[in-house]
Image (cartoon, rainbow, N blue to C red; front, top):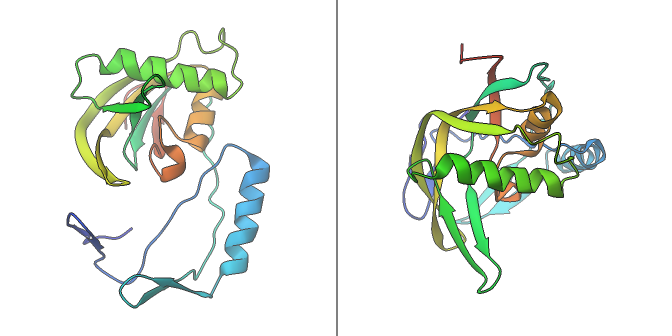
Length: 191
């Protein structure tokens, strides 16, 4: 991890010239394709802004933790983004734990995403996610400031649902890097 990050409105300064990136997917074939692509790019310079370049120096397969119970506590390693989209006027609204209706809205949004991903409605009927030690944050994303949440959350659901969320990400804008979570504990409160 980068220890001395400095954020400004337009850039992130790294404390040292090293960066760790974690890629996660719930689909095994997608994971194999990306792993092969990463390995093929190893040790090749990749141009970056301001006369910089990046070089992928190592690729590691991290063992997955599988949840075996129907409850887990997770820590968001990237912000939990919850998007409310209105198709009528193609507008988006983002909410965080600062919203008094957060618990109900996040539950509804994630349940809809699970159904779209092929989960049976009966299997996800008891799904719940609740903030434990979470706070609002604001992220600059594609020329917009969006409200998100960081911190720890409890999830109650079938273990297959929890494992899927840990691999695919939680919430909206996952393909942009939002919603990456780490398992802290299962079956109760964080260790």
